[in-house]
Amino acid sequence: MRKIQMVDLKGQYEPIKEQVNRSIQEVIDTTAFINGPEVHSFQKELEEYLGVKHVIPCANGTDALQIAMMGLGLKPGDEVITADFTFAATVEVIALLQLTPVLVDVNPHGFNIDVDAIRRAITPKTKAIVPVHLFGQVADMNAIMEIAKEYNLYVIEDNAQAIGANYTQKDGTTVKTGAIGHVGSTSFFPSKNLGCYGDGGAIFTNDDDLAHTIRGIVNHGMYERYHHDVVGVNSRLDSIQAAVLRAKLPLLDSYNFKRREAARKYSQKLSHHDKITVPMICDVCDCHVFHQYTLRLKNSDRDALVKHLNANDIPCGVYYPIPLHKQKAYADSRYNEADFPVTNMLVEEVISLPMHTELDDEQIDYITKTILEFLD
Ligand SMILES: *Cc1c(COP(=O)(O)O)cnc(C)c1O
Image 1: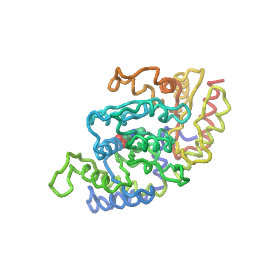
Image 2: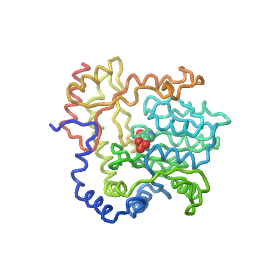
Image 3: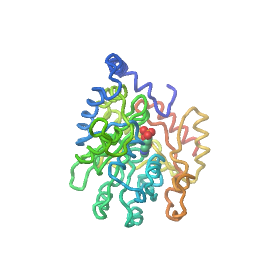
Image 4: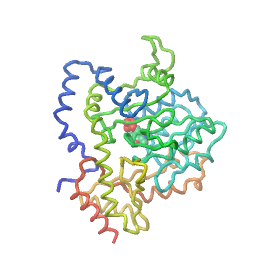
């Protein structure tokens, strides 16, 4: 059996090696390292793939979120509602811009922001909601867009873990996540579903004016060379990363298919056990791309299972072990423990298994067998 890895980037590289190497060499040969033609071509190809009018590439997924918020003109003191159970980047940029993060609980089935909790958190200062499509599962966007319309709020989709996921809207049309809200962001961090070989990110929107504003913000607030109209940042996707992403984008659907197949096989072996809750797979809506395959464990010692798996050469992860409202940087006397029952429970129960495009049946059998042995 091949050594099991949490993410097998080498295995994914092998079949596309020649094309990736050639594309990188071409960038070097032309020395168009910054804003080269590869970046523009990738932008166009991603716009087409996502069915979104504007893609603005940038340096990473954290920048993408920050720039999206800057582009919307959010001001210090504006309240932004987001999930308590997510990676810190989301709340970090809210705080950096001196906006007020309002963390709310998630639902136990999909791990995503709880729609009723959003409603309860809305005040006259609320300006935006940031749903995170956590682990590749799409948040309840139909309900979220409805709330946003009712209260005149912006929706910024953090799509870093769900690129390529389809979502069926109320009117029956299917769209790609990231293109549902007013603006979306993603990360091309190497281990993401569409990863480059370094850092990268992008912002998406169907709004022409917002796209124009954001194109200036990523480039030092310049709309005309050396005229700085707004305070911007320097956030670019470099040409070598764009070349890698161009080679991988046509494979994204097949990558996500392989993740879903691996998830299906895991669930087949594990779902019958009464101490295990496998991730919810929605058969009809085709909306989980399994950035992570995350189990919930009941009445068992999750941390002992982590040790047992590691002792058997199986890597695993706990995403995330601490709720954001309990992190030193984001703790606030406004928060009440009774408002976070689900997040407080999930941080104790969750464990993420190896998930990538190269997992084979033998590896999945070994991983599931090792888990079941421990629990029985
Ligand atoms: C990875 C990730 C980010 C940040 O992306 P970087 O490219 O690492 O800055 C933001 N939000 C979520 C949910 C992520 O998983």
